[in-house]
Amino acid sequence: MPGAPCLFFPYFGSTNRSMEKLMVYLPLVSTRAEYIFTLMIRDLAGAEMILTDRLGEYLSYSGPRLEYAPEPSGEGLFIRSCGLLSEQSIKEQSIGFLSVKGTPAFFPVNDERSAFPFDLFAAAFYLVTRYEEYLPFVPDKYGRFRASDSLAATGNFLQVPIVNIWSESLKDHLKQIYPSLRFREKKFRFLPTVDIDHAYAYRQRNLLRILGGYGRSLLHGNLKKIIQQSGVLLGYRKDPYDQYDAIREIHDRFGLSPLYFVLYADYGGDDNNVTRSGRTFLKLLHNLDDKGLLGIHPSLASGMDPGILQSEIRGLSEVLGHEITRSRQHFLKVSFPENFRGLVRHGITDDYSLGYASCIGFRAGIADPFPFFDLLSNRSEPLMLHPVALMDVTLKDYCGISAEEAKAVGRSVADAIKAVKGEFVTVWHNESFDETGRWKGWGSVYEDLLMHCDEMR
Image 1: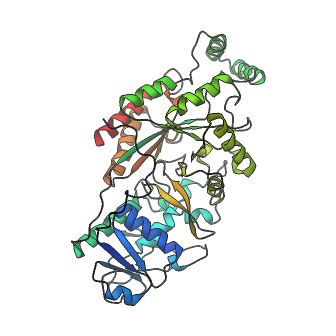
Image 2 (image 1 turned 180 degrees about the horizontal axis):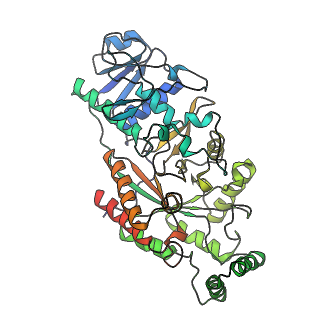
């Protein structure tokens, strides 16, 4: 059984210099074009390529060729451009949905000479950069972009890794025309992650919060919770959120090491983890970090104050004695480009926030990690974004489905990502492993998902 999954997948490994290269001609090699062609051709399709804006060099090239332009030169595979990649600004775009052999698409191009009836590079760029989230929108109560307002929801492809599918379709076209062109193979990867919003239900809280807990239970007449809280505080009952041994055991059984993201923030509002200085909490952090798989869960407050983000990252780094390089935003709240710019400034190299809390699926239309592209500065940044496809809270609270229904949904998402040999990132919470509380019966959902993914590896 394989060991811990690889955690960094920017490309396909070291470059094979003997591979034949695809030459791509564009009248203008912009930073936008360079970014999306590298992602679609090299990172997803697995082909070596050369980008050029010199037509003479392209026409004299003896190897496989692809031309991306308003008009073809008559040589190589031609894909008509719609103009988005040559722009520098951000503005409302004319989308124009269509279906290509049963697959959703947009940015149509009316040119029979084009290999595709739509500009797949512009469409992919629009999705992975989250172009629509730079435009004005009406946020939800947490300030998040609503899944229901997304282009993917409008076009009914939110549950489809559409960018991967387009890349595979491009690969098929190139194979037909250039049989000698080689493509490196990808493999399906499963990466489980665990969020720790509340390390403990009752432990490691100050007196005021303890009394507040008792007060709320009394107000609602919840005698069971009063007995449970008292038992934990008196030391003869286990804290219901202390599921860390169970989490480690189930992942060890499948040869996996999950990533943990811990909320290391001051108490306030929806940022309400335990007291940061508590000895039990600090011991927990070191135990979870023994394999170097602990990341920061930046608070909601940090999104409004860069100084708070710096304090949280620096504080956790000092506790653990090493740099923190992985993150996931609390409540999956991200704002483009501010949140990601802040992460880059503070040394975060990999972020796992790109998903919707309210819906399963692919927020950026892709099931692979990819570099963050800042649309305001029009450049790629040294931060890999790992899309989140499935979360426990989404299934239970937002979708409102049963544990048995959740098993089928989890398998379906895994199968969709397996089909494109992508990276499947799941989000579970330590408290959802508690079989005595509101998550009773959901342990089997997670185990079923691990079994299914293990069979697929």
